[in-house]
Length: 475
Image (cartoon, rainbow, N blue to C red; front, side, top):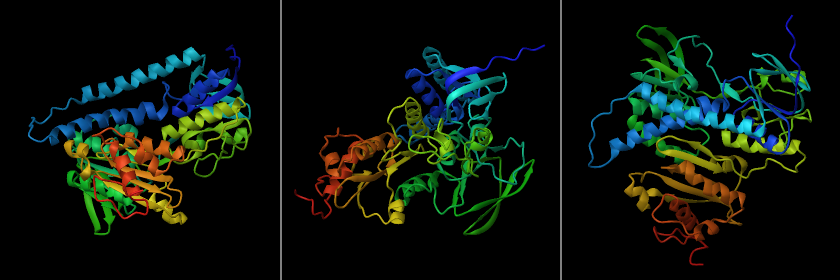
């Protein structure tokens, strides 16, 4: 007769081991809690580390180096020979190294890791499958993440129809690749496959790529990739026809009418859906809406006081850096700390070529809210570093309050935009005025200097360009 294993007792049970989950587990352990971390995957790190942020950035680095090498003036190279096995091995090595680091930190902190799918069975218990275990907890943090949205009507099981996880496996380099969805994930994968030799077509049903970003930023990116890719269709729907030996047959229906096309592979990147509906949360009394989302307050507390939730499962933006900050709040709230998740700005970054980053208020949001603002834009054509680096197509934009001069939002398109946006995020968190940014001495010549120069444009004190008319000029 098989003996039933004794239940595992935990002060804090964390369901999901992505950035939100492992951060919550580690912080709770650091604060003296007995922590059990549960995840269905064989390794810690979740989607982000194993099949998302990290592998995609490794491949995007490869793509960027290849693209920049081809663009160096006066230096000519032979066409590259691509060893897909070696490219995959390099990506997998990075993932392995980071996963091993997380596993080591879990051991050092005394966090018990259970590799199996977890579901609630009551307000104080979780059942973990394969190997079977019951976890009894005093508090729980749900960090079960999200999954790619599937388009209805597409055939199941055809390996030529990929989500982002399958696309990152790099099974081959298709001659023609259709990207359905012009958001961050779709455009990042487009950059990778284009650099490796695929002819790319992007289809976005909304009127512009990257719908969350302002059009002036997107225009710079669209101009660059529009010259590289086979086609970019916005305001266009993809209608599925059939899978055949010669490829995937679709019809693209847009402003110019309907046009049949045949592709070797298709990547579906139309968004992600929260996983709240997969964990039997209702058995714990936790409310989950029709979209799989779990509502929380500023302490990341659900409607059940001892159960918290963080990351993608609590809603947009579905970003790893948001999840980690929410996770710290949840762990500290459980331990009685007076904390709230109340950021002034959460940055978004598309690691495309060029990169686009934005944080805080966008012009579109300001228009919807009726918020008054002034705008300062510094074009990178006037940046010595950008010109020297072949990156003069970029721009840096700051939005600020006309009365208080406090920074409200920022948008950057160009090389390293994802790194540059951090200064603007800090300025918003510190309630800085654009004059504070302008007066901070930035190194020259750098891309970071463009943030200060945009602030000088807003202040009317710039000397690198003709200063706009401003009541703050010549102060």
